[in-house]
Length: 101
Image (cartoon, helix red, strand yellow):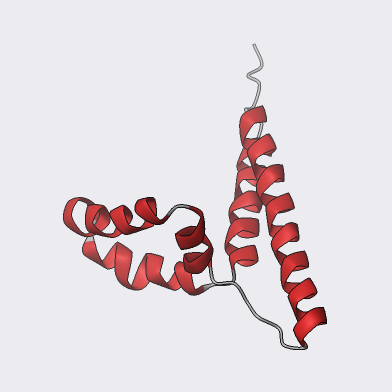
């Protein structure tokens, strides 16, 4: 569970970094330029994004890709990364109940 919490905090920190990056661009240009999740993923690791679509459509379930994942890829990157981080923090903080003997 500690691994989930650490990964969750890393993703929340990354989301804050992405918001800060957007704010800096806004300060320099005067326009708020949202970075979509799909664009960020494409810039970080193009091959995995391009491989994900055919795998999901062929082997898992085609409607999961469109409209499911394509909608998430259009969200602001800070929202998707931060949301995943918060979910991992919540899962990581759940402690199993102790049984009384």
